[in-house]
Length: 524
Image 1 (cartoon, rainbow, N blue to C red):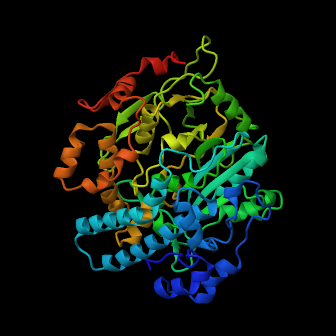
Image 2: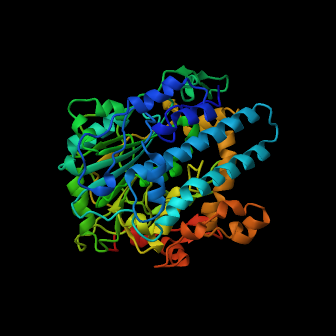
Image 3: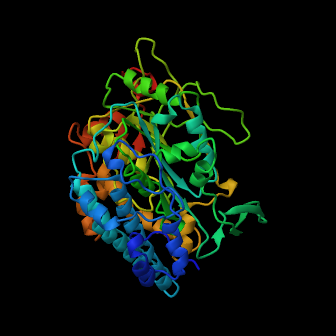
């Protein structure tokens, strides 16, 4: 059943379980009710008002009680709670699942792929406008919660069917100098196996007569739940009981790529001092938390300073990670030559350099989506964009240009304090575009590529591709993809043209030229 998903637990609240079950799910009512009956909540009552009532972290999709009232007060703009935000996201995902299931049924007999693509995009935008935009609108220009000045760190982790999420959580809390100040917002996008059989990624099973890899997708057991792995471990359970793990569960059928997942994760921020965005397959150096705080404070532009880099890689068989190597500098870029990526700007690393005349980190040109660290006011100035579903590329150049034009300077940390597992296709791990293809009856990455090709016009228009001007987008009839771009676009502290000149990007020749200041570590 390619159209199925684990909709059972994503209900509008315990008091609405029966109504929801009858309306939108084929799952037995007693199975759905179990999500509410078996919900596990933090046992420690927070002294921070907006973190009460608490949100269940297990089992997957356990509903937020009294969701209607919490949503209403959160949308009022004056009394937000983490529980209200969680309920808004759950309700959005519920409606998205119902929409996707209807499309999946239609796709079985649909021959017009372009028409199907356009209807899927329209439906997503309609649901975002219904659920997400009223919430964003209520808090534009301000942080949702007051920023606590207690040295706390919120870590945004977007996890797609990731077998290392649990290990990443354990490593983070084990290596932090102050684990009591570490809070996690985990978006757990899994195949839960409730309504259909899970699948592997495209696994290499041999070579064809021309020597090219042959791949196969096979049945698989339900994915490991890294939050459950962490929260049931006696050594780490206390952090879950203290409310330091905020988990939003998303069935893989509603997985829309990293940009969408990071949008959700940003909404799980609860007022912590610092914001750390990363992937869910990491290792950490000892005391990484306080060392990153010290490093960002050492930047000349602090408090409007962002640390970012592409972390070094690791293999699961490697010894314990200690960090300390020189951080990579994001000083180069290129216009992708891939039709799949639609010639979007991709950022990359430059040469290693140091500058003994600068007492602190030096500036770079770009932010990596897989790791950045900043004060939480970043969320007010550069709110995450809910209108980038299905995009795998483009989020980094959009994030970089939006942050810089909002007055944030970007710095390379002088030492690596985290390591990242890079995942080439030969590993055979699931990819979100495979789930999208199966859902809409188009196995493989092709249908997601069609979706992305239209949505990525939003990024291209934002950063200044002349052939994707607003006039050209409207001429193509694609003005939908520019919805509310003024609220998720460039900042007002510096201009887009100033950023283009700063980064030496040439749109006419589709080339990224040398940034000597970045590669020579000359700018503090």
